[in-house]
Length: 133
Image (cartoon, rainbow, N blue to C red):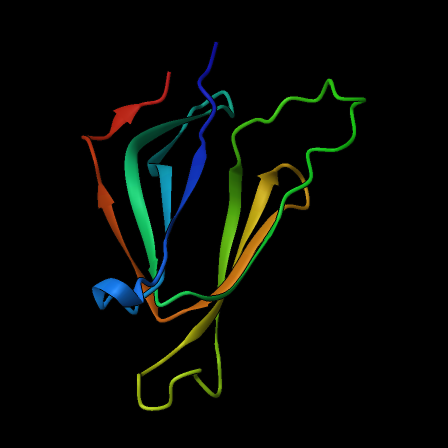
């Protein structure tokens, strides 16, 4: 059975007591490093576990609805369809540099979205890429 690409969400909140003023949104993802298109029309993926961190996050909105299955619908992994980035004309902290509105649109559950503002992101691979079985 093929393994599902998945996404896990973590929050790094500001902590005034420790002098930390940045809020980050941390996503543990299966990052597709390479798409391999077969002659039969099939596709295989080379993936690596990665940590994707969005910096200076504001106005976080998470919309995820797995439906109403009469209390029989389980929670499954989230799956990213695409990430959209648009510049914001007036950043929340003038002089802090460029700021963007981000929308992470989900394949699963359908219609799901994670939306927020952030200065940017960083990504690091946690292991070597490997073919998805």
